[in-house]
Length: 406
Image (cartoon, rainbow, N blue to C red; front, side):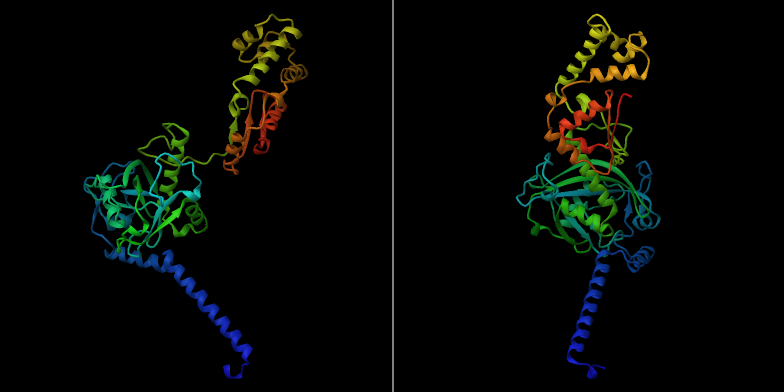
């Protein structure tokens, strides 16, 4: 066939053939690196059933669903085949090139925060060849989690955290449950601050193919685009770690009874369906200046329009919950929509743009919040007052609607 082709036809066919070969090679390489093909899964299942996976006979610290150790533990092979609850460690390894990792400062952007990520070896009995942002290990029966973490980080990466003279530090942060169709475990999460050079990392050949230094931004991008390349429980552990550090930074308290209310069973907060903001002296705070003007307008209405003595408005507020409710109950204002609107219009007639101005910090905070979560103003004032406040602060575009006193 080639003999009958012209030169241009031969070049064209050769180009197409090279493109096909290159594409096929990339596909095969991706399949091998991801470890997620049916062939890999079937091979792993066969090795588990045959007991030929790494440490198949190791006795693992199995636990109940509520993290109570079982009396004897179970072989690692049984844990994997039957997805038994067990204990494991997860280690977040922070690393900056200058060796400085500020323990409490997360003010940097995602591109400037770096972690050491493992690519697991093909010999692993769980998630072979996957990327792991929180490497650790399965806890043996009778083994303490902290001892497991220290041993795993030294064996797999050559990071010594046991020697008091070591520059690297390890600390436990919390315990968390994780469950999916392949693994059920209670994990102790640790943080290691690695202050050495990346080239000094020593990978354990049977366990780790490579160690990558990745920014948080790159990890998030990769997980978003190629989630199947990552260990799901490791990604979950990283999300919990980031939530915990953010909560510490902003001073959020642990609220017992909620998913993230206990460090002994720490969990992700569910994504809110909506967020409601009170308006005056909550969404913004001006040291009660606007509220004082509003109080004076209510006092003025009661004295000048209704002939009540000064101080009576406050008494009505204390007795009935709001001055308006008191005026209605004491028959000072007719119980009609027209009369109520007149009162609300008059007392909220404030020079808002003289009292409030653009709040850059508030604008930044709102712009950094998840845009997919609708945000509403929930206020005891009237809509037009809240609208003028949002306009003056320069944040009106962040809110879906206003739920006012009416």
